[in-house]
Image (cartoon, rainbow, N blue to C red; front, side):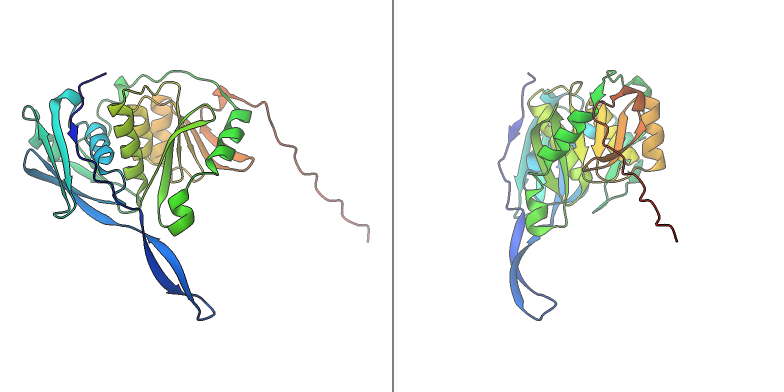
Length: 282
């Protein structure tokens, strides 16, 4: 396991208690999702401001650095220190990040809640990613979706968030919610990196769209299967084809659509089709 940096433990509550007035004019106690600004300073240089729930800021920052490919080795990071009073996080490294100016000179604002930012060429190095060829049982997909129903705690309480899960078979190893799906996937990437968890036998689930950013990040984590209850974008689909990510969308109940990798699905639990009703003779 790589040497880990010094990390604060500055997670905050995910929601706020507020009152609302319903359609009957009644005052109802409820909750709304938190949304906090967190500005990243890398060796005292301001890099980006993330909008986040703030529940797992250290893992979020660690995964963001990894997925942006700004830091290649964890042992290069000395400390990640979150300070909510200044809404900032100080990232210090043992040595200057090579070619940082070049990496920061090009950025792409991605789609999604809160909008994400990807620095550098998104397509750079995709041809070097090698994902394992896996087979996935249809029955396992159904069992996993059933298990996932027990999560989404913040969404059920306050709404306004996306959720992502790292799964092994039907087991949910970790579930993360945030105001943007890109934050949730980064926090899981940070968790995997911190605990030296490999992705080749894992499944990644998201409530959000299967965009180019999601496919690239999951592939960088070494995970061959990407599952979502939402749809896919053209660029996400094309990149999944290029690098071999099994892309499963619209997964809810017994329904799903495999846009890439259908030949790797074992259809062992096909639901029965409803027979069309016979029209009564007039």
